[in-house]
Structures are given as C-alpha cells and as structure tokens.
Image (cartoon, rainbow over all chains, first blue to last red; front, side):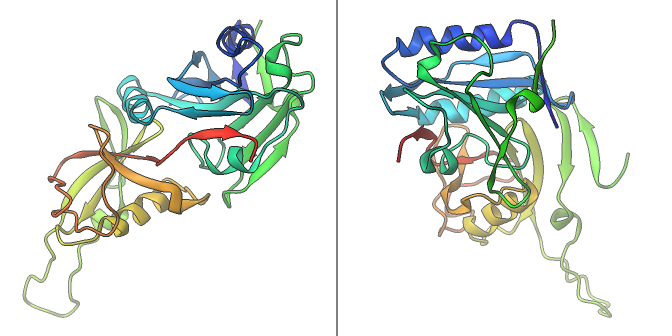
Length: 147
Length: 117
C-alpha cells in the first residue's frame, strides 16, 4: 500500500528534522493518518525523544500516550521518518526498535540530517513484510505527495 | 452486526476468535464453559478485545495479541503496558499483575530507538 501524503507533509517533515536535529543530531517523526483511509498521511508528529549524532530514543511514557491518542482520534502511524548524519540506510537498531513492527509499516531514512533538498533524493525506504522482516522499497514508487 | 466485529464510538473493534470460542467439552450435558474475562488491547490505533482467564500468564495474552496484530518482528521486545505506562511482567498471572476485567492495555515495544548499531 503506497503512502499518499497530504500537501506540505514532506516540507513539514524536513523542517522538523532540521529544526530539531540542528545538523548535529538525528531526529525522528511519525507520519500519521486516518485509520480508515488506507495509505493516507496527513500528520507529522515529533515525539519526545533524546538523540545524538548517530542515535535517537523515544521517551517511554510518550510511546504509550501516543498509542492512546491514536486510538482516541481514530488514527494510525503509517511510517517513521528519521535522519542520518551521512548516507541513508537501515541499521540493525532501526530494524529492531521501530514504533510499529507490523506488516505495511514504513521506515524512511533521510541522509545528511535532512539538510539536502526537500524530497526523496538519496533517501532509503523499507517496509515491514508479512514475516516481520524489513524489505527495501523504492521511495519514489511508494510515496506520493498530493499537490 | 456480525459476530466477528462491531462498531463502537472509538472505531473498529475486532473480537478475537479466542474470545468467541469458550472451552466446551463436546458431548457433555454439563456446562463446562471456562469463565473468561476480557481486556481491550490497543496497538497503533487499532483495538482488539481478547478473552483471558485470571490465572493465565501475561505472556500467553501477549502472544495472542502479537498474533492478532500480526507482529512477527522481534516479538520478545514487545510488551503489554497499562494506560499509566507500567509494563506487565510476562511471567505473572493476569490477576496477579493487577489486570482488571475490561481494562485497556497497550501493546508496544519496550523501547523505540534508532541509529547505528
């Protein structure tokens, strides 16, 4: 299921990654959308987290409150998007500790602390497959933004 | 309304087949139905109502929830949390862990992180 972003989601994502990471730390946001509209993304959520040049960790209480809020609002998280200092790829930690490791959940990695042009250039995309493993996907084919 | 699902104000709730299938001994004239309480488990915005016995281990309910939500990746990193963010100990019985019938539990990873390594 491809992701259809509402207008401005990509720009908002890059703005958050840049502002929070300040070109020195990784940062992560979650793309959310209405639970009953498959693939739709119309929200960018910046979690409470700590981060360094090559890592981030989400606040434990925030994770629980996030899931409760998604439930209350009838929404779901469809992807995590985080920045890397240099090249974009999926580390073992990225594989093991994602927010929602169930089939169809995406993970987009943005290179160079999101300092490059807004878009999918040089980005890495993976999706959780039916057996729980992460499968590399073509970002341009899987992510579209409405204009 | 189908037996498999029902609508609530909070959205779609799916009744687990486990909840719908009490243990009844075939051919018996006695009612041998095992009493089951239920909890609602929420994961990434979706709910499932799952039946359990009070003396059942948290691990068993967790395993069932993982299957229901199709979480196959690193299941040993997942846990059941209360709304107050207390993780239920896997090896405790549901009642001993303080779970009340009808309670809302959150299925989530014990830690969410990323980075090199």
